[in-house]
Each structure stands twice: as structure tokens, then as C-alpha cells.
Image (cartoon, rainbow, N blue to C red; front, side, top):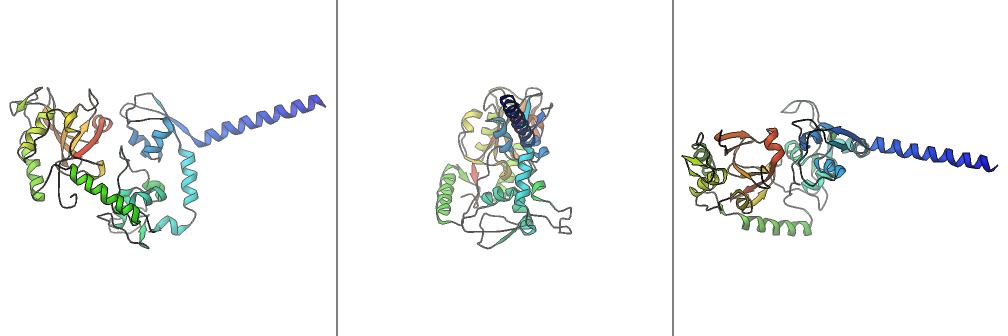
Length: 322
């Protein structure tokens, strides 16, 4: 009798251990980082958000190394999404409720803010109670293409930091947003006279293309990255500090999805904030690159710069920012 009980408890222990191992295997998979990979690209590839990927691996920033093994919480996320999509109406539309914001709706529906704006032609942040927001791109729509389910829309590359949403419908959120807008406006160093002035800044910056790089330089005969940015903005009545680190501490922070011509882009190169360039549109920026390359244009999605991007700063605003 005693022996039978021991065997019974041993059997239950084995079954319990197997259950735990299977549960963990279903909740996550692993991925070995390849040369050229970025966190955002890995998240998009596996259909998880950048923040979820960071949380699963206890990562604070975006820096990764080749052959590092990441935990991908894929299965758990898929189960969550399926449970949210049981109703056909929920898959296609979301009805705005009191207190909703675009970022809040994005989290609830697993559709990015950028996708919500695109599907519903939303330019600002204002929402109306009862407004129905499309979550799926319908076949045969003006921009054609297959319908995008929330799972697929979720695969869009996420930014390093959460996008800050604008006008909230709830009274408390509205007041908080107004205070934030005041704070952001105060952080700006000036206001563009017109959209043409932003384009003029881009033309002036492009006029330096080919100028040689020189550490500590401040003219077309030789200039470094922060000197280049300081020189360009001097033409537009903004006197910036001399180093990239100091320049990153002024102005208004903006998300990567909201970049506008003239915004400053900062990168983690040899130091925490070791490099800066000027955004010129179409995901490109102009900068004093290096001694070999001088002042040139590069794409922000290039793996080298994508991995090292830290933040974006706006120095001058327009009517929508102030």
C-alpha cells in the first residue's frame, strides 16, 4: 500500500513537471539574433510589439548583439489576439467611448496609432463619442490591397518610445493633455514663419553636401556633426549649444512617427549621445558623417542608424505644435 502511494505521487509529480514545461513552450519561442537585425524588425517579424519584446527579455534600450538569444512571447500574444477577435464586428470597427484616446484604442485593439489614422483619415487627435473607427482595410478600397487584420497591422515597426496621444474625451485626460501641450510649446525655441521656411532650411543644409568633416570645425572648409547643426540653425535665429549631447537637451521631444523637416535626430555612436543630424523628409537626414564621407544624406532605416537612433527633437514649431 505504501509503495503504491509513493508510485502514485511520483507519477503525479512527473505529469505536473511536464505540464509546466509544455506551458512554457507554448508561451514563448526563442530567436537567435543575426548580423544586421534590429529589435523593431524582430518584433515586426514575429508579430509582437517592441515593448512586449523588451519586457520578455528585460531590455532597457534597443541595443542587441549578434548571436544573442531573445525570448519571443509569440504564442501567448496570439491567444490574446484571438480571444479579442471573437466578434466579426469587433474585428472591423471600434466604437469610441467616453475617455478614449487614439493610443488607448490602439492598445485595446492591437492596431497601431499610425494604422488607425490611415484607415480612418484622422489628421489630428480629436474623437467623438460613438464614432466608429475602422480596424480593417476593406478589399477594393481606394488604396487597394488585401484586408489587414489586427494581427497583421500589429506587425508594423514600433517606435523606441510610446507615441503620446493628443486630445482626450474624458475631462481629466483633456486637462492633462492641455497641460502637456503647454509644456511642449514652452520647450520649443521658436516658430516657423511658414512651411516654406522649413523647406528653405533643408535647402541650406543640402548646400553643405560634400563639405569635409573636421572635429571641432564650423565652416564649409571643415565641420563636425554638432557644428553643422549649430551653423544651419544660426541662419534661422536659433543659437544652439555646441555639442550633440547639449543639443539633445533642448527643444521638444517628438516620436519617430511624427518627424518633420528640420527636426534633429540623435544617435548613440561612440558615446550615449555622440551624433546628430537634420531630418529632411522621406525618412532621410543630412549630417556631417565622418572624416571619409563628410556631409552627406543617409536613410534612418539603414540598420546602422536604426540600431543607434535615440531620440528626435523639434526646435521650431508651427501652428499645430504651438
